[in-house]
Amino acid sequence: MRTAVISNIRDIAREDWNRVTGTGQPFLRHEFLAALESNGCVGEAYGWWPQHLAVYDDADTLAGVAPLYLKNNSYGEFVFDWAWADAYQRAGMPYYPKLVSSIPYTPVTGSRLLVRPDCDHAKVTAALVAKSLSLAVGKQVSSLHWLFTDEADTSLLREAGLMRRTSCHFHWHNAGYTSFDDFLSRLNSRKRKKIRRERRYVSEAGVCMRIVYGNDASEQQWQVMHEFYCSTFNKKSGTPTLSLGFFQEISRTMGDQVVLVFAYHAGKAVAGAIMLRGENALYGRHWGCRQEFHSLHFEACYYQGIDYCIEHGLQLFEPGAQGEHKISRGFLPTYTWSAHWIANEQFREAISRYLQQEHELMVDYHDDLMLTSPFKATPGDDA
Image (cartoon, rainbow, N blue to C red; front, side):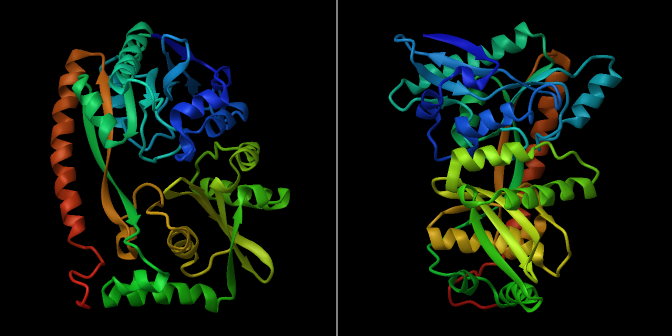
């Protein structure tokens, strides 16, 4: 068994990578990560240098992979370590570069230690973790971070000595709903009326919603959708790192896993949302608009997604990071994790204490939010 560091994902054949990762989680697909690299969304411009890890079995066939990047900033990660970087700077030490195992600009939980199904899982994951740590030492980085790891990977990384960090997002789960009205019937009366009122605002404004799959979207529709995407960042003085070429490429290579929600008014597109579909889940990623309409953001980013999941039998809808306002619309607090290795012993001890305190606060936060669930306590209850 040997390991390697891959600086261009196209050095691994698409079929080999996808045989390891599967295609059910869209962000782990070779096509998605390759589109980021080939369209300049990672690399020199934004400080995400690919350093993907690969493990090969005794037959020199790809047995495991982990997406990994060398970074000189903390943008596009959604697990915030700005305070750590500031502490390093005040101590006269460099925090960057660092190594990050993550999907760029994508706060979605999933496996980061990926193993071909017919391989020895424990052996391959151990090789991936060992290679990541040796790379971190060899490159003399300040730290190594595994972001939005699933529960299994989080446990493995903790066993390897990394520190767990706990956070919270808001996810919708399909309880076997037969329709949107069936979903609403499980909510308490006040929240049910609120959602119906918000959807009514949109329809009464004359706004029509339409779902378009990536491989069916025209060049003009993609140009409009990319304009929406950029507009949100421009309004917030952010940087729209995903190019039109990136979106057009994944629409060709990933087909109906790319789900676009368009809002039309008077025959013109006025807003849109970009989502990606997995084997059993829908992921809301980006939103933008040309014209403001009451509750249109909720319709495009939440209710259309819930409708889609119910219609297609998807069990999970992750609408994006943060946002306690999602709870009243049926999205419940859900733990997310990351795992961290810090090279400097003094900083490692200080951050370890901080993460333990933060974990306890996050558990209290999660439990308090669960008390605000909009769902009825019992099926017959309508309080």
